[in-house]
Image (cartoon, rainbow, N blue to C red; front, side, top):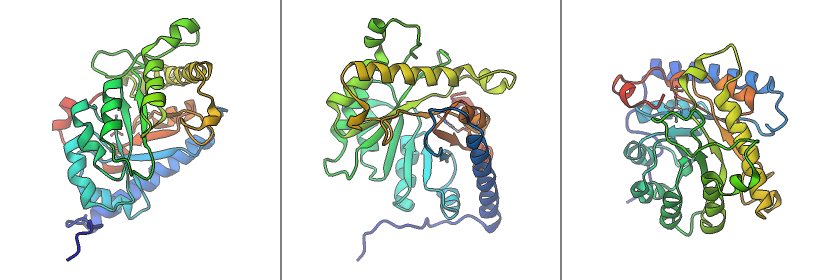
Length: 287
Ligand SMILES: *Cc1c(COP(=O)(O)O)cnc(C)c1O
């Protein structure tokens, strides 16, 4: 008797739904490509990664996107992710983008194809994750530190850093301490980059540069400087991409083009691919 995980969900999308997803996905891909080829930022070295955010959407929707070559998916809720992941192909890379509670670290760490956690904000959660991950995991779990660039109370995230902050202050900042903690105490985690959501107002304003995205870019630059000063050289490739560059995850359906123009490496698009979500979510949405 085979106990292998199924690779096709029990319920498939209707032909109509599948072709709807196929078309939206193709359109978003074209827009991502166009926006990133227009990007003049010298720091964006990699092809941007499109994460399809499938929260509140059935496994059949995920599979329809999968059949069109999509492999990276984002989920916000631990329970929803633990239900969907085993029903779907194991070569999917899951990105957790919801509020992370330390007591859920164990459940998340047990998902073999969890690729990243983009919402890390505390050393406590980092330690819990590192402890919960199986030692025989083929590669470390990518983590991104969530930065509250807009400073809104309802958004989680560590405070950003600015280029004018004195070095001594930067070295003691919460974000720097968290990054160092991961590099020194959490061998099963890889510090991949920084993530932000940003304020809705910034995302809606097309007249000027998005300040939240610019803030994440400078926070990354200041953090990299602090890590280099503290003796964590890029060449050690213990962090960031293969060049030791911390990646930036910013941009959603309404603002991913602006984010790519600002130098984003990872965009998280839900509505643009899968359509509007159920009303219930409006209440809990982070925006
Ligand atoms: C829901 C969500 C997204 C996707 O939002 P859309 O506007 O549907 O593209 C991206 N990032 C985070 C953190 C989210 O919670």
